[in-house]
Amino acid sequence: MKSVYENEMKLEFMSKSNNEAFARISVAAFASQLDPTIEELADIKTAVSEAVTNCIIHGYEEKEGIIKIECRLLANTIIIEIADTGKGIENIELAKQPLYTSKPNLERSGMGFTIMESFMDEVQVESIVGLGTKVTMKKMIKKDEVSKEEITDVLNQMKQSSFPMNN
Amino acid sequence: MKIQYDPNEKVLLLQITEEIDHHTTEKIRREADDEIARFMPRKVIFDFSNVTFMDSAGIGMIIGRYKMAKMLGGSLEMVNVSPSIRKIFEMSGVVKICPIREAS
Image (cartoon, rainbow over all chains, first blue to last red):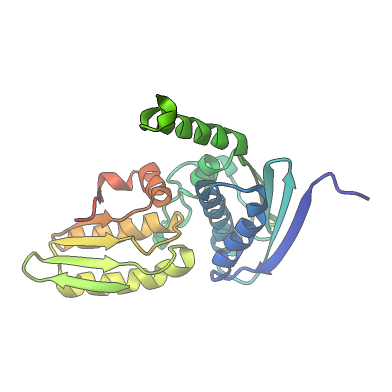
């Protein structure tokens, strides 16, 4: 059957902290098909890093487990699912609170979900205690708006400059 | 991490030379704490010019070093912070206690 999505990818890797960089770089490489700006790409990398770190520290509590990432592209939107089969979150609303952390002794800031929510357009968290957690994030790559801004910038620069065409 | 200490000004400059995430903060933390304890500087400056990525692990790392520097009578500042990293520090309010300065 033909997929409704324009492109899809799946990744599975062990819950080791040195895979945090692997995960965000892989997702960023996939997302680059949408021609994002450097800032949009940085936002995606940061959000992925937060979600994967949560799987490692909280889901599996630094023990061995498998983290799954699925990415889909639809029009100019990337949909990223990051899932673990770890301990799950008892109170999702509390976990999402800025500065809340269940592990303050690890110098964790409690800003993970806040960063995901502000860097991505949509963040959804599903969790069942004892079964695991899945975070689904969406980001629209605002290609058109950026190019409009760029065009306006160029036009303004042309107005201000002393090119002969202004005379 | 590159380390530079100015004994006259009692300023310790720590230049982070890797991406900052949960995986790398353990090592950065250990190295920075050793240097802060060794020099007991009046001011600790973290230089981010070679940091191409940072997630929220950097917030806890900086606050932890700030606490240590403060305990030993010093302060903490950050320089050469890229816009995407600045966004994370501003969002978390870290900049209120550890200001971002323009590099001199």
